[in-house]
Image 1 (cartoon, helix red, strand yellow):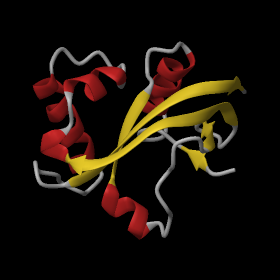
Image 2 (cartoon, one colour):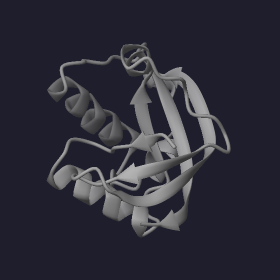
Image 3 (cartoon, one colour):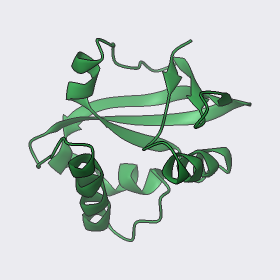
Length: 125
């Protein structure tokens, strides 16, 4: 089973995992280029992955219910809101994600291809 690690290790990952486990976070967004860098295929609807904590332990099993490749500028408010991170608007979500990827060394603009993933928790730890 493949695995998913959300955000940066540490407090951010703890927070994001907690949002998943409480049901507040049912989506995430990845850069398409990262799949090529990691020589990894896209997720597919029905695929299950282990959600990992900071120590690499499985905290849940996720099942993907939606996978879409689109331009960063075309991400919808519906998807952004499903990320459950408390952003007040699509513009706020975009700003937070631009800062995240800038910090990771991969600046994005509206033409950057992203993968919008929707999921549900099918098993805890």
